[in-house]
Structure formats: C-alpha cells, structure tokens
Length: 151
Image (cartoon, rainbow, N blue to C red; front, side, top):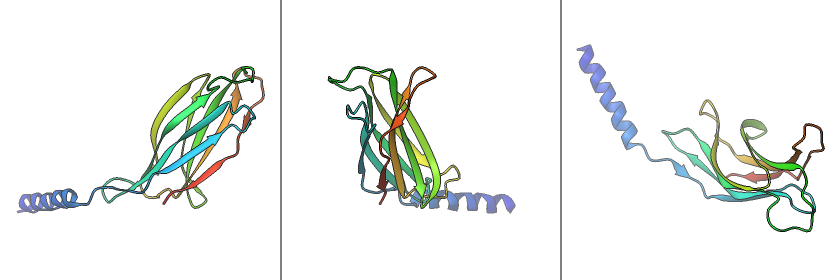
C-alpha cells in the first residue's frame, strides 16, 4: 500500500512539473559602459535579460563583449588591462556578481547572475569598467558605474 501511495505521489509531482509553464523572459535591456578616460581604452556592451519561472530559479542572463585598447587610436598604448564587473541587486541587497578581464583584445561573454539559494530575483544590474595596472605597482581607475533596471 505504501509503495502504491509513493508511486502515485511521484506520478502526480512529475505531471505537475511537466505541465508547469516554461520560464518567462522579460524584454532584453541593452547596456554599455566604458573606462571613463578620454581614449575610451576599455568598454563593454551587450544585453541583460531576466528569466523567471516556476521550475527554474530566477536569473539574469548577460551577453556581450568587453574591449581593451580597441581599434586605432592617437593615444599611446599603456600597460593596463580592462575589467568589467556586473553586479546584480534586489533593492539595495547584493545578490550576485561576475567580473571579466581582457588585455589588448576583445572577448565575448555570456553568463547568468542569480541567487545561490534560488529565492531572490534581481531587479537591477550595475555595470562598471575599470582599468588596472599589469605590474603589481601602478594606478587603476574606473569609469562611471552604469545602472540598469530590469523589468
């Protein structure tokens, strides 16, 4: 009898999960940020899109490119690399963060920000590009942090 009850409960649970609606995607929000210097040595751009659903945990997908020393410039090369940091918040509470780095090149990235426990949704993402010295001693600087509200 217990075996039959257990099998019935498992079947009902499986049917419920299969019948659950898929994750819902909000409209993609374009983003852009740069290092703030006059030569625009470091920059990033792409899209941010939130997914919510009953089966998967809420997440924000980020796709884009990060460029360091991109294209011809009248500025002389420096010995720094660019780092883009993406920080997801729920209100004022930090939920997740991710950083990508590139030196004298361009990279593509694609990743998700989400709550480790799968409970909190992210309602805004802050994007900032900083330039850091390759030698251990040197000057680092950052462009203005750009904030994007996620619908």
